[in-house]
Length: 56
Image 1 (tube, rainbow, N blue to C red):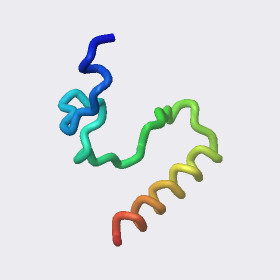
Image 2: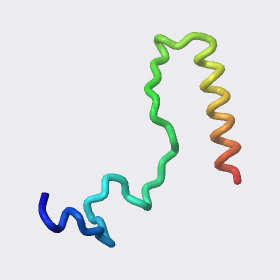
Image 3: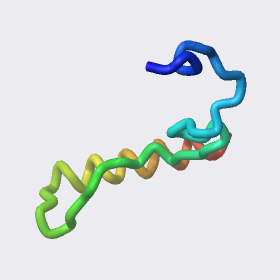
Image 4: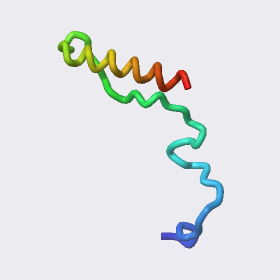
């Protein structure tokens, strides 16, 4: 470890996630061919919730 590894930096230009990144929160893969009725209901509920959340 070098000396500068112990110092706190004010501006970390190498951060992994930008602070101004906008995410829609969707991070799940979905396949229509493997979906059952419960999956389709869950997707419909998810779309309705997303719509309500984005209306505000």
